[in-house]
Length: 442
Image (cartoon, rainbow, N blue to C red; front, top):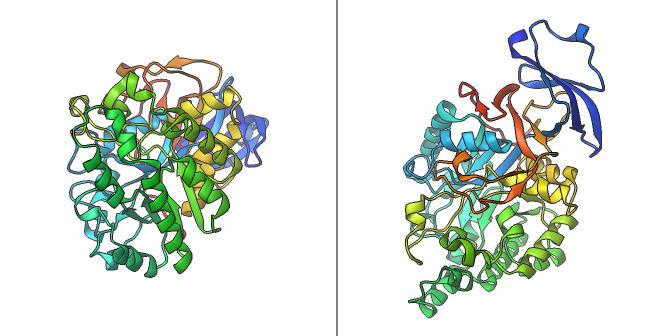
């Protein structure tokens, strides 16, 4: 037992009520067993590993609820091992991954294969969405375990594009599990691609897939959700228009997320980093940034995801529109948001709620998202006193770049703990650690 015991000493511990306690946390096997100002050595198993966390802040591990880890089938961009290393370095202890791999995650068989692959490769905990097509309704109802159904309403091609009203209606009308939507209107995107054909400036991407394309799809999804009283989650909300829609019309069973990119980057990024700024839905205006921030602070937007979607630098170097959309994010998301907290835009407790607690609640992930006895020991010790820049050479993601390169951030993970085991410690990885498949009580 002692080999699986851990004691964190003198940390600034974020408690479930949002307050901080300077104290100790005792971990046995995979669980937190005690949180106290000073845990007596006499109550601790012999051989317990102690970590001096003086000067560090202890937070629940980040749960990133939207990532694209490219495994299987696109491993030249990323794979579950490299992506989970990036997670560990970023303080992300669990992730929910999307179905657009090869083969597509649209059946129980492929879901099982992905879970087995993750069990062999992942340093952190994992869950996988089941992808909707126009034909796989039985799998959408029965697939297990999964956090929910992913629908690409637009900005996709092939079987995963579900842009016909009849197919959408059928999915919303059958079953009860959560539906997560990439909400962009495909018809409008097609029309605007024709309208702007021949343009090679990547900034045109934000005009082709404009605010209106996002708003129309989100309106449709909310309408269907209300019609069938169906649990709906709106992925990577990107526009002021959608935020204001939700402010005035958000049923209790609807949630929404925003990415750090849509909070902190805008269309000016095309001038400095070109196609590295290209993602779906696209970056928007500074006004959109401001309205999204306010919606997040007010609880209109419920939590944060990265939409980590890596491509190689060679792929990104292709001229627009041949350059692929997407950017990495799991490694920088927590530090980006904690930097905003230290600079006064929000609080550390809010960041933790947006990046852990609220995600666990929304997806029904038991025993995660809080530092309290009985909860899983998925934790991150962060350094809020030191600023360090985002350096390309230090990144663990296989794609090897970040849109935030050069940004000077605080709140970097010093130690990341998954299931009571130290997986990352001041730049060093324990690659023997393996995460577990997440469960979902929905």
